[in-house]
Picture 1 (tube, rainbow, N blue to C red):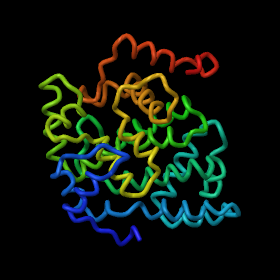
Picture 2 (picture 1 turned 90 degrees about the vertical axis):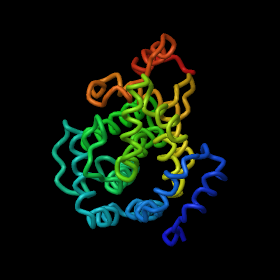
Picture 3 (picture 1 turned 90 degrees about the horizontal axis):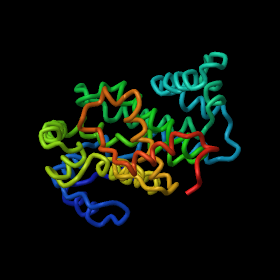
Length: 286
């Protein structure tokens, strides 16, 4: 039972080294830090319960609403999202109405993200991000990924969770994050490149490991791990997340998050991003 798992640092390091669906994390200090945080050992329980509930084809909306209603903070977030995502519609005042409006898949994604953000809460803001801005930025990436790959839940959810490793570092490895933030601009490199040079692992890789530890889909973990890599011309969900992240950086949040997060965009990549900005019917299939 995954609820009973606790991860000694040595065992955790062995698991990391033996996992073939992600890059090995060479940072033993990071592995030990993750092993010491009991809250990270098990997947978010409300999300697990919700997944079990909606797996039943005969599930009733009232049962889902009752489960979400047990957590006032999550219920408030569902209501907020239902109203902000459908601003032109009549205001939704109750959880069942919010669920009906945005759908079970979207609710499930939102619950997972809300629980992840709550588990990685920190009193210190991530450099360049307030907590609210970071979540807004993640939602913006998810929205762009959803538009680029409509109907693909992995692309959207990968966008929502693309910065989970950054939250993880901010909450549990702040010294590491501060060092990387200082090293990146001094050396004119990206934050992820600074992390790799200093520690051998990056925050997208830490996020991937965390999601894998929770037993979430491999495609989702991979989308998070590769979210900061250079995109290519494929339509794979992980690549959609990469493109969406760069488009989000190029939009309204670019000046707020700091230079360590900004990628250099060459002519080839600029052409690819310009193509992604065009309406779907104008894009040439890859």
